[in-house]
Image (tube, rainbow, N blue to C red):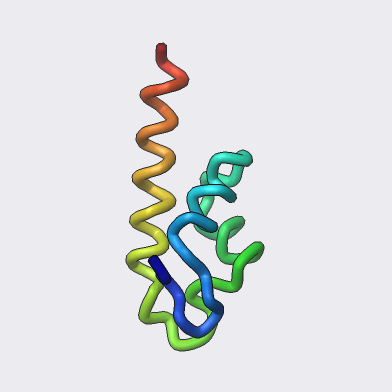
Length: 62
């Protein structure tokens, strides 16, 4: 689904960036431009990054 309409950024793109090592919202924002125009998508984008980083901690613990 589209998270950022202004920059055409999807949740899949955000998760792919996180899978490749970026677990910081600032990194994701720099790579995609998400939340850099109107900003309405910022909370959802940050939530996706946080959820991904929490789930990756579970995988790393095993």
